[in-house]
Length: 231
Image (cartoon, rainbow, N blue to C red; front, side, top):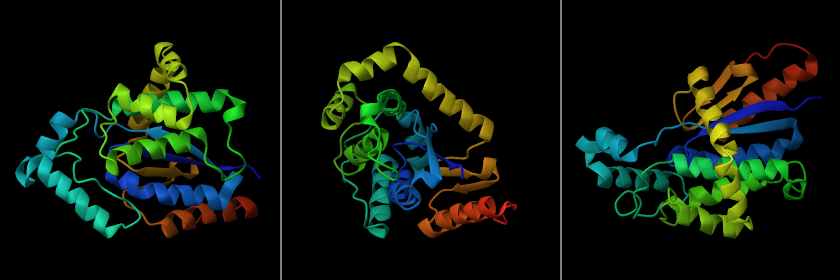
């Protein structure tokens, strides 16, 4: 039985994608090689110096946005949010972190020794993406910077020269451009978005694990029976 393609679109500076990561990890762990996860990025925080004042200028600006994230963390105890984010730590863009992660993704794909230990195990990319999210939201580090990327690469055991090679060759740039183009063609509304069943099933925003699981199970049932999904 072929694996079900599941596209997960996010922006690393989006708190709802940070919240949702535990649900995606559970899908990967529970379904293993029944689900083929395709990680892509969208640009929600491409220019934070424009976006946040425009969206939050009448609600307290950066400080108001930071307070909002603290409230989100209170409602979702499996995450931590550092009070310094957006008050003292203000990444200029998510694009540089996306580019770093695309380079890591390529390295993981092209080096068999860095493959996951087995179905459901986190890949090099999975570990890198979670480190990036935690570095910002939990630890209050500016993940837009090259220095932060170098620190995270060292934590992963990946040489920064390998990361830089993927960026200098434009492989990582092309992969990121393909993600943004995919989001445009698919009319992705924002982060996070889950796309299943050739685009017929789409889950956007803070969607609970049971809803995601039900959608996956229904596609598996339909695939097994040869019928159409009723989701």
